[in-house]
Amino acid sequence: DTEVTQTPKHLVMGMTNKKSLKCEQHMGHRAMYWYKQKAKKPPELMFVYSYEKLSINESVPSRFSPECPNSSLLNLHLHALQPEDSALYLCASSQGRGRGTGNTIYFGEGSWLTVV
Amino acid sequence: DAKTTQPNSMESNEEEPVHLPCNHSTISGTDYIHWYRQLPSQGPEYVIHGLTSNVNNRMASLAIAEDRKSSTLILHRATLRDAAVYYCILRDLQGAQKLVFGQGTRLTINP
Image (tube, rainbow over all chains, first blue to last red; front, side, top):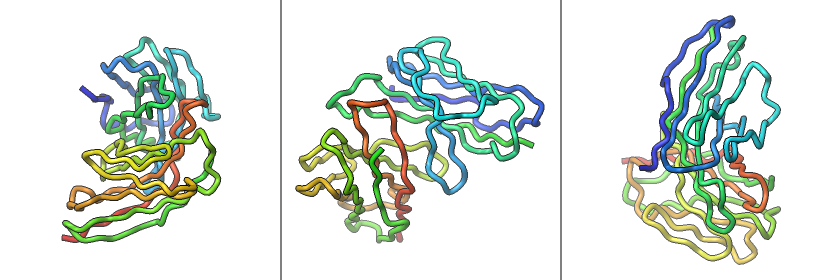
């Protein structure tokens, strides 16, 4: 099973709402990622968790709050978003170790977020 | 992160080979060359990776120049399902666990 599952697939939220995106993998991977992708643009890295600890935050605004409750789950909590935050949010995972092995990153299909 | 340069778009015909080029003149000795592709309305998927030698797998082949400053992803017999954006990415596995995407090449396959 090489699947990364993201829910919900589509989310519409108002600028004052609080919502969460969820991501799950059962491949025993210890690194998990959030990417943001705008239309016709490449994915942009937001956060990396390694062994359930936040290891990379690419200067993401605090209205995006990641959480890794355990090694299989990754959440992205959303609060006070702006319309320009509307995008496809991609979750991904990898083994977390990989010198010389390539350490393939597996992506979910994404959650389409619209902020109104 | 070292930068890669790819053509914005390419077009090919079904059942013909496709050669997707990538330039990475500032590649370091510890950078692996990775290729991912993103089909419409899907997340990116791994295609292939290599360090110095040419590589083959069931999806594609990767040809790496001797000086490692460029590489070519080869799809031996393109199908309509291969229409996607192809990303060439350098990844230093001695550093952070990052995958940083460039602009990629949008490949169109004509029936």
